[in-house]
Length: 131
Image (cartoon, one colour):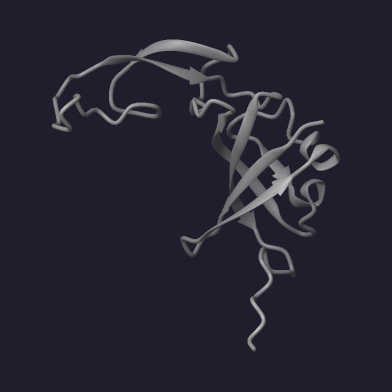
């Protein structure tokens, strides 16, 4: 049984979280960063999403261009490393070896980031009831 957290970001700058389980989460398996997915497969009728990233069960970020499930790579300031030294100061040209996940969504991926490309008729999150 596969469980994932979805982070859905909208065009107005807000993001919404939702947990999905096996029948819906299985539709995300074997997808990769940059793929478009229909919202009908995830329970959002009329929506269309773009996969922008995510992280695995240990918190390592997904990175486009990596085919292995997990890999240690030498990177500068980019996805997985912010370019600051241990004291929090900027250091131009600093590179470090960091562990990142591949671009394919597998069973070890715990969080998937999605960008809303096309909105459906219903809202992503129902408004709270006023009492």
